Image 1 (cartoon, rainbow, N blue to C red):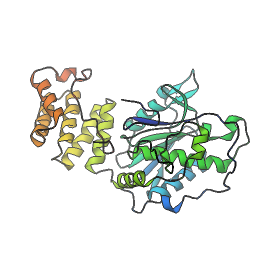
Image 2 (cartoon, rainbow, N blue to C red):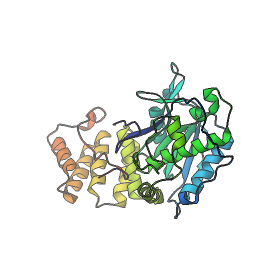
Image 3 (cartoon, rainbow, N blue to C red):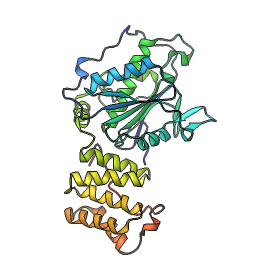
Image 4 (cartoon, one colour):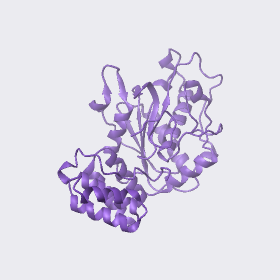
Length: 330
């Protein structure tokens, strides 16, 4: 899976944190979501806020109110989970953001639109000493850390109003990635690439017109719609969670039986699960539906020539899926 540092059309995006020498010149005493940032239509499903470890209740409430007002969605604060051992780097005393996304995909609720995890632990990502947030453009999962949003982290007096503005920007930016928005070049967009804390403080509070249109469209999608199930199945497939991937991709294919991409990726998941005959049938269906689509034809040749067998499915990485989710450029 390709990693991107706050840029790129697919994969991951991060908000990098760098220390600053002084706080912003002005700090609002209270934060109100701008009217222009309120979705016109009701969201297709709830957005879950998942605390990782201990998180201040007032910050969870703030995030939920923000989500409800921005996305016109029901917000559910889920029961906190302990920091997963596989995601905690003891040598660095930091949370591995990429590992956390894997945990979030594993625990993704079937009835959820997307998940925003929040932690007070400091985080890092591959090749980056620390990050504010981390999100995946296709998996509908993201995480933000409040550690480096705190003025106290830099040895200065705590400013709760300032932290709330930063938390709003980090959360809305990351949730924007889960709706398929890459980094935006518009100066007036909250999806603009962020290089340091100064840049985060300088971010506007709004999506630009294009990012807003894409976000509202994605958020309106109900979790049980075929495209949403395909996105979940593709995420699970990429992370080798084959049992659940098959279940999600079967729901996607049943909801839109004429979609060749869904059939192809279902075939890949079935093959990985060791069901060669069922995979062959899925590839054949995809081939009939879209003779021009290269992946089903390629996968069919592999299976028919015995180059991939069911018992190899756990290790062989030859058969290919589309790699596309509902928010990916096509």
